[in-house]
Image (cartoon, rainbow, N blue to C red; front, side, top):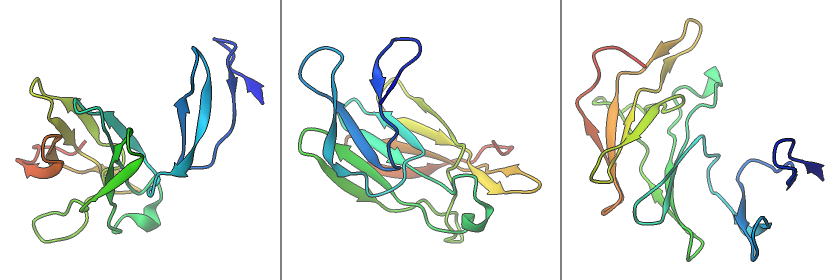
Length: 147
């Protein structure tokens, strides 16, 4: 156990995919009895109270053309709903590693960019909207330049 430097809170080093949740009482945390089925790189708390996790190559050039799933975590039930990996118009997987994200006023999450290639690095031009009401990721018009 180590102490968090700024807030003097106990923390613990965890494996990828391990979830913690605030336990009973202010400032207490506990490990949950389950893990995320993917290694999340991005997370967004949705207006529905669920969390959208998506991933990518994780700065690993050998994984650049792998399909990357995303999941929606229902915190109350402790379940995950898998989402299909995003693909480009030719059906190739899109790596959302290092994508930007921003919520629209209506609660939809815009995800823009990602990784197109490493060494030299090129950002992807792809863009998506994730709608929390139907939990669907939809491609929208691409950006002019990669992010």
